[in-house]
Image (cartoon, rainbow, N blue to C red; front, side, top):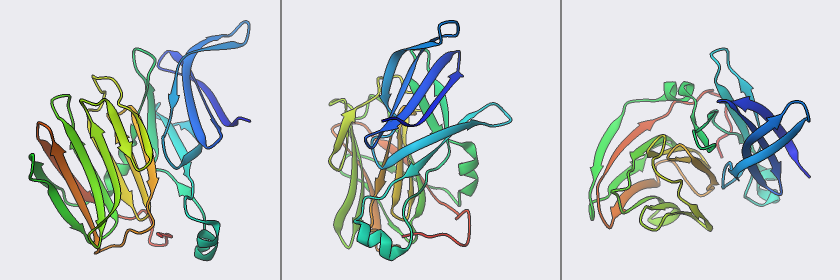
Length: 252
């Protein structure tokens, strides 16, 4: 059964997304307005993680904005005890590339929440490490085909709690038990763009792929971020603390 289907024209092509069996599928293709038939030409997974049932709207300036539901990955007893379940994703701007591929990135309004920027360079054998005083952070790491493997990790009390690995020579992304191919170069936005907010981690890869993670063991002041590179190349890191959108939020 399809849930929350969304069908519209964008960038001179037609786009259909639908949710089923825990995943959101996107397609682009051709719509025959006379026969009322749609023929998909390309398709993919909109988000490879805890993300479901999104819908879109158009802003006054013409952007197509996507909102999604970030689902729970903890046992029902735990979120029942917490008193809430699930949350909304960051708003994403959708577009379609010349070859019919889905492209997306966080809406510019999100960047207004940034605090002071911290910059660092990462070389082989010299990772960037940062103890996070709070769990609202934005990480931006430019990545090109000249890089070997870029890895982002979170540690709690010295124990790894989450890891994302982008293996350029191996054409793969790995995050926990989830793996998927890298989007083909050139990327419309050649970077890893990651947002941390309590138990939620939203990751954008190259402006083409996304994966949303839930990690419930993270604790402010006890969580350490690490960015490393191996094989070849170097990385430049930008990190911003993020302001909360409300003083009255549930953040477990």
